[in-house]
Image (cartoon, rainbow, N blue to C red):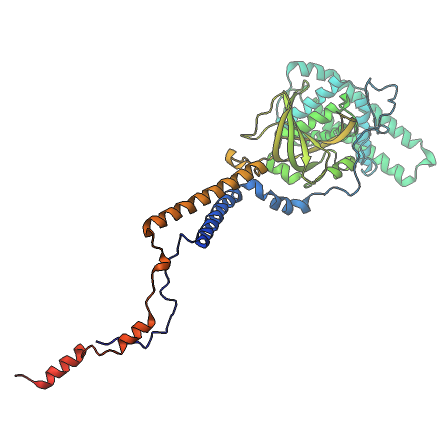
Length: 475
């Protein structure tokens, strides 16, 4: 048998000795591998937490909302002397606006006359009569009936209302007819036509609709549509009574509870579809007239909340939750939101101030730029009325933020100590196996010795022996 030495020089590194765990370089590499593994485990645990990825959604939603203006926004309210007819403690930032809607001049002549008619009636009626009319309009929408007490009171109010409207139409016709050359002929003709249409509408549809409860009959479809149109006109006038840069005013209660009624009946999806979009603090603060009474969406972090009682009302609302929101657009000033409800599993909110740190979004009606007492004086903030915040529940074990520097340092030290312990264990184990002899004392095979074996004659091979026997033949 002969050894073939033709591949002696091939693959010189094929037979590598196992690592020597007693060598310092091997132990350092092992320590670094354990440390890297533990670091990867820690990073994987932190990466699974959703709060670490909020910046992605904020960056995505940034184009939808207005960012803070470069010009600083001063929300402090400079006090000024209140008019003589203002209640004690009333504070104004500017002269009070009129009682006509901001878009009064943009309305057509028919709507302007209608607004003026009902503005005159509201001025000549007290709050109880106005609330009675609102209950009647609500009953027409809900297809319900007024109770006996309201029916008795409405009989007197309806008679007064009929007289007021008839007198207004008569005086308006007379004023147009005697205006002479003060009005252009086309405008005079148009006004006379509008007054005639409103008188026909009153006698034909609206007047009978208001008398339907007294006649104990259901409303017809045209009558319900006429009452809905009347409600829209009254809503415009109610919004015109809101004053910015002030606290609550009794004249604002009609608009306040009318908005709450809409929110009670609103479906969240329809409300979101009605929204003009996501707006920021600066937009609401600087353009209150533009957004008043409109559905908007605001986003931010709720940092403070509490519950307050509601004034006596016909809607069955006992109170609402007040949220102080840090806007998501980066503004330093808050947005205040009054909410009717809380979502499921939301942190409990009581009468006392509750500190929060919850990312929420509100879709509701912008009401006013509201004045409130701050430590450095009186400031103002946008005020919204919403049904419920949009909030996503996060399990308790996923709500933790980044650890504090002390905890992070302790975790790194613990990982390092664990890695050193594993390296020490590996060192002791390797020494116990090899005893006093290390792997460095083991001599690898000598290639020259293998080559010398190939030169020795160790006899014929098996194949040669068989061939020789076959040639000799049988004995």
